[in-house]
Image (cartoon, rainbow, N blue to C red; front, side, top):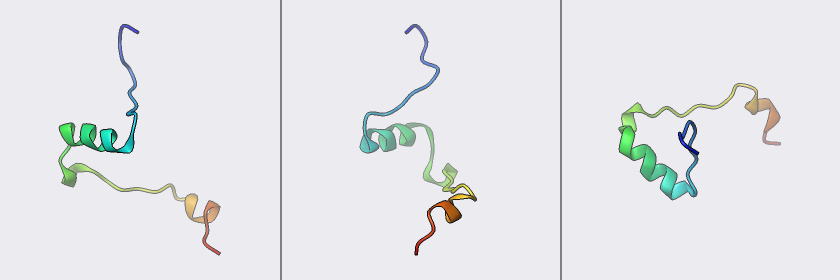
Length: 43
């Protein structure tokens, strides 16, 4: 592949390290899809 348009890390640890290269912790946002609270409702 000549150009890497998308990227996926091979592990959670490597993903966290790669994100830390480009973003400060305060720049990250935690989010959840609105519908997930119904799809994954705790019973």
